[in-house]
Length: 249
Image: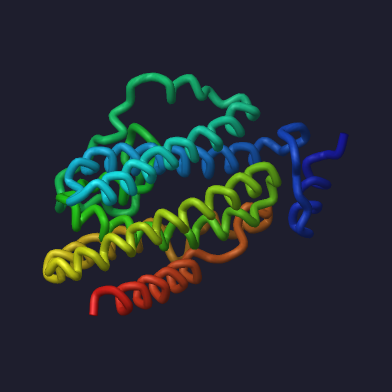
């Protein structure tokens, strides 16, 4: 059995792991943390979006919202299965948890996670109506795409493959959001969209974490991360600017 130092050296050189066996304790803990954050964010995001399905202006929009909710729950279940292989207590996800709970609209959460679950803080903020939901979906959609592209390169191969598959669906979710924004623009909702962009943009940006994260270097050595937070944020800002310029003009 290889020792922890040899595994760490293997990971630093770009090695991949394919099963829970022989994964060092710290690696397991960080991998589970990544998975828990993703699962909790998907469940909270799905629950929040489910609440506004019937606000959709037509059947097409409601079908699109329902599809997003369904697939986000499926994404969470896929990653939960991998967590279970590491011995995580996934039964807690079968119990009632207030995934649709939200803070006050203008509450400042800072950079710390709230107690109760591991969702990104952006999913603690409430959605107000259909145009707000669609705007949030587009801005957070591009953030999710960038984050999943990063995580689909992680050194734990089964999770990397799962994230790569989920990425394709999340890209479609963002496309559905862009289609919805274009329709809202055509219906005269430019002012409402601009207000939502102002609200959600800083909150989505915060989901990338601190620019100089002390944990990044540790995760990089484990092969769990490859691109610093500030570089990912820059990618998102560019993608969001381009998308909004093409839609909200």
